[in-house]
Image (cartoon, rainbow, N blue to C red; front, side, top):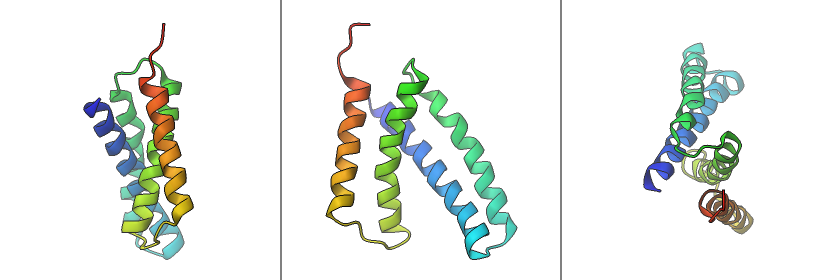
Length: 109
């Protein structure tokens, strides 16, 4: 379980970090090197989720979506200095609960 969480976190950092660099390049006029670096990181992000041991692509990506929401809220708070409100935290916790159900609920097959 810890390896799965670690892979999700690395994927989240790659997606958010890569996207942020592209954002800085296109929206805030940073040098094109930001865009290139961000794009390369986003390609790496496409590979990272394949390291998960879960057999279902759809389930892995759906669960990752919940992790992404949580990480995006934390990124906005830590990097963009936008303090999440109570609804951001409630939404993030609901996503976390959804991820847990999707990945670790007992199944018969």
